[in-house]
Length: 437
Image (cartoon, rainbow, N blue to C red):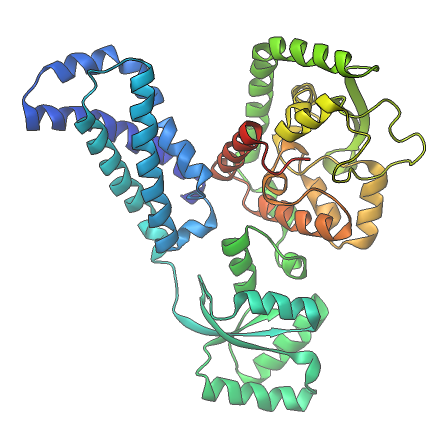
């Protein structure tokens, strides 16, 4: 159900808007509102897109919305913004006769209905006391992020690095923890081999454990699948059974075709600015790796000086990169340089939303350094994506590692609701230039 919340929200919001007119008629007895209802029928069908868009921007379609406090606070903010933005739009459209009471009734019913749709998710939560077993510095940092925080499985009350304990010491320690801290189950942040050894030991002792509890925690809190836990997910099977993917591909082709037609005047203006700013071609073509490792030629607006990599070879773009032109810096800031990739989407080489398409030399490099990197090649790369709107710009193995964890989250939660949230965040990047380089 959560995957299709945007559709439900749109339908209930449209219903609430029409109901607001009739409630206004009952409260005020003024038949003028029914005439207004018929005159503004086209606008009314568009109006529910506003709260749905705001809900997406505020993250109410993500796993974090399973927290009642998170969902309610975001829905309140969405309701307030809906009221002010819709009122402002009516003012600029000079529709002064639209009663403010209808807007208030609509916003209030939106909140009630939206919140009611999310109640089933709140009830899935448990109140268990959880204890984390981890290993090494990375495991310790992940545990510290979890300590005394609640997850869908319960609250993390403690943890220990098993690297500091022998087999017999670990056995005695865990017995002590279960008795003294009243721990209900253990969460494991361990590599697969270590995890198998510890789970066998826990089963011998009759101690409960939860393999996926830590996985759910980082999905809820950070929108990531940590690489140490990535093997718990069967990505090929999950994607094969995802009913949304065939519709997503058809949607990509239709929308890219429409956008190419609508944006053609903008393409002409940007092409002129690029030619005036620096000598060289308007478009920049580069080989990238697509779904299942297939190679294709990606097309972008040129943002660097010609032959930028003649002396350096393939390198990642850096902060304040001197190779970037003046207009190129603006294009990157607003992500407008990505628009020609709509042609790649129309050709079926890319998707509107997915992992960032990477160059073959970097793919080979990261596959050797970072576990599960090839998993992101199970879907088509995208013009925008979860890692692009959440993660930092690629600067080396650390940031690539972090963005891969976002990509794995996207693959695991691929749905219309997540795509809508990514699209909403991307629009904010285009408008305000946040997160680009």
